[in-house]
Image (cartoon, rainbow, N blue to C red; front, side, top):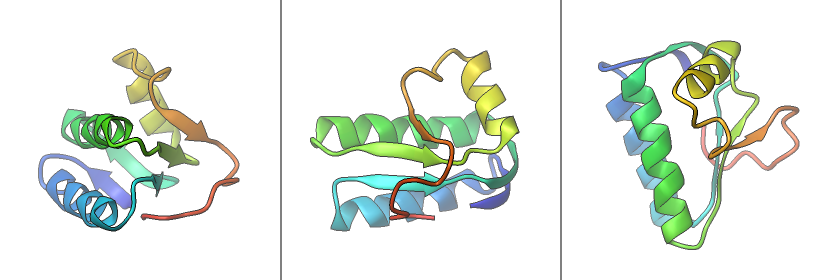
Amino acid sequence: MQGEVDAATAPRMGQTIDAQLARRRSVVLDLSEVEFMDLHGLAVVMRASRRTRVDGGSFALERPAPCVIRLLELVRVDGEIRILPDGSGPLEAA
């Protein structure tokens, strides 16, 4: 994803993640080029994280932009989402 993730674009991100989860149980989402994320984007991320956990898979954010990290910290869910800060994981969804 790149640019803004808000009420207008979060549904598209959710569809992208859902399409990946239809083919595999684990997803790594690259958010390094996100310039803004609001609670709509966060809701999509949290739903995907919970879904993969329930399905026995894994979910991680790869190199999340500072605005994403800040949002995760503000709502105190930063400990619930796996973060790959250096791009060390395989990129399975973007």
